[in-house]
Image (cartoon, rainbow, N blue to C red; front, side):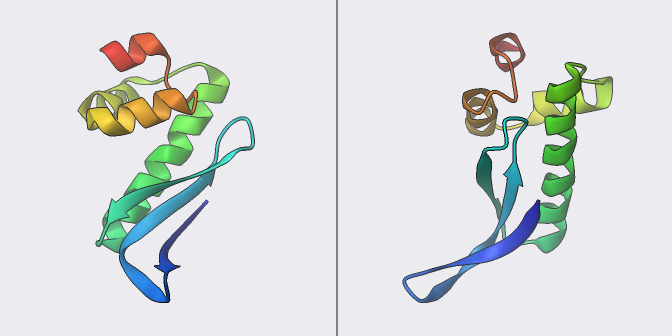
Length: 90
């Protein structure tokens, strides 16, 4: 996992990105905004989410975090097989 800004067309982004590997070993990235603290928190939560997917147990705190995610991010996690369809619908 890593948090960093990216460079496109020779310009460094204002936003931080969280880069991580899922439970299949596939790499993904999520834009997390301009605050490094928020990016680090997202990094930690995504790492926890991958662990939950591996163990097939989503604790209450993780479930509350998932429930509060924007739908767009929930759909990404579902597409990446980190959330099941029933968790997406909740």
